[in-house]
Length: 284
Image 1 (cartoon, rainbow, N blue to C red):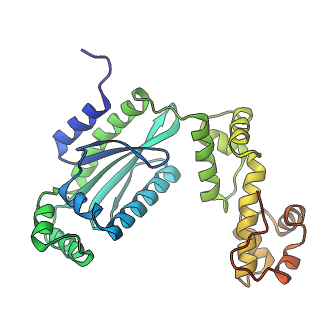
Image 2 (cartoon, rainbow, N blue to C red):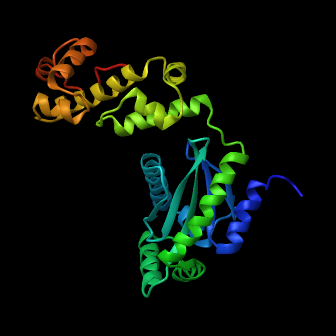
Image 3 (tube, rainbow, N blue to C red):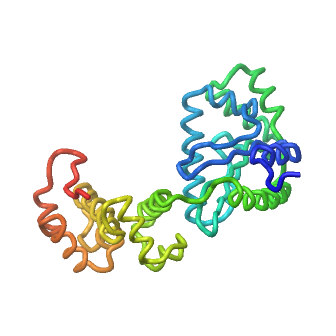
C-alpha cells in the first residue's frame, strides 16, 4: 500500500461520496487538478458562453480574495444561483492554494426553475439542454454542505502537505503584494505581515525586495500615493479625507510623503493636475 494517496484519487473519492465537482487551484488561480475533469454538464454549458465564462472568472477571483482575507472556508452563491465553496490550502501555516467545490443546487422548491430561467436569459443552450443539465446537478441543503465541507477540510490539509504545494519565495512575495493592494487603506505593520506570512522580518524583507526591487514600506507607500493621486484628480475630497481614505496616519504625514515622492504638496498637485486621463505621477 502506498504511503501517500494520489491527488487525483483524493478528488475522485470525494466526488464518489458527494457527486460534487472539486477543483484545486494554485495561488495564481490556475486549476491544477479537477474531478471530474470535464466538469458537470451545466458547467460545460456555461463555459461555452462568453458572458458565462466572464462571470465565472469574476466569482472565482472574488472567492479567492475572500479566502485570502478571512482565512476560512467561504460559502457563496455563484452568478447562476448555485452554491459553491472555496477553502484555503495551507502549507506549514502559509497559504499555498485553494480547493473549490461547486455547482450545488439548493434543495428547495423552485430552485431549479430559477437556475433554468437565468440560463435561458444568458442563452446557454436550448430549453431541453438546460433542463437536462440542471436536472443532473447535485441537490443539497446547507446542513449537508457543512458536513461535506468538514470532510473537505481534512482532505485539504492532506493535499497541501503531501502534493507539492509549498509556497515558493516568489509566491510568498506575490501574496504579500496582493495583501497590500487589498488592505492598503488599513493600518499595516511589518510585524503583522510577518505573523500573516509566517516569515521573520529579515526573511520577509529579503523575499519582498528580491521580488519587487524595493522594501515593503516603500511599496505600500507607493500603492497609497497612487490611489491618493487618483482621489486628488478625480474628486473634490479634502486633503485630510484623501489621507485618511488611503491609509495615512495623519494629514501631515501624508503631505510629507507626498512631497518626498511626488515632488509637490497634495494641494499643488491638485491645482496643476494633468489633463490627460489616467496618467499617474507616481512611478514605483
